[in-house]
Image 1 (tube, helix red, strand yellow):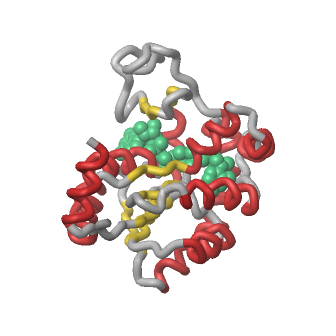
Image 2 (image 1 turned 90 degrees about the vertical axis):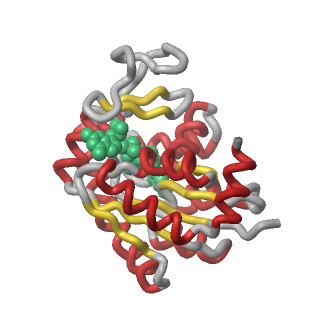
Length: 226
Ligand SMILES: Nc1nc2c(ncn2[C@@H]2O[C@H](COP(=O)(O)OP(=O)(O)OP(=O)(O)O)[C@@H](O)[C@H]2O)c(=O)[nH]1
Ligand SMILES: Nc1ccn([C@@H]2O[C@H](COP(=O)(O)O)[C@@H](O)[C@H]2O)c(=O)n1
């Protein structure tokens, strides 16, 4: 079995984690694991964790560490034969310590995007809830306004993107992300990217991954996902 590649992408809400994760999954064959999508699936399925998580998300707060860890770690244990990119987890030091005790990461991408840019982006974000497909009326609009390109179903704006929830989310992110960033900086696997435009950041991330992901892993992953 070829070696595996495990990476994390982190950044504040609206920083482009999902957008860049999709490009990485497409270009390098890593399995994109979105903690936010996983939570929304649990909320939609009315699971015990989903019901509890919803009470935090609608207030723009982070779901408690033990709930997130209990949700995500078993999910990662199902992926022992895959290279993956984890999006939105870990978000706190406790989550990072739990993750680090269960697997060895090869790379952490941290997106450092200005606050005004985040607010602007999220005010124009529309989601197709069932698939998690993300649109932006300025950056990547749907072909027909308000409906999903693939299913034609209506798009929605997430409650936690609304300005009143967003400010809490952004403030909280800054407080909890710094110790996580420090852990991965100390491990020598953190790479930070700062800009207001994803299309300007992408070539640098793509070059980094091309250098870091051994070609046999990328080829094997692409073959297994096509
Ligand atoms: N204008 C503009 N919008 C962008 C850019 N990159 C991403 N977006 C949009 O901004 C919004 C946020 O991008 P996401 O990829 O969902 O960001 P995220 O970090 O996953 O956000 P959370 O899921 O809230 O953590 C989406 O509507 C994207 O389509 C960009 O360079 N310019
Ligand atoms: N580790 C995490 C990840 C997510 N959340 C909550 O889910 C919301 C949506 O997540 P996105 O990655 O799609 O932004 C987020 O706003 C948090 O409320 C969390 O608590 N812990």
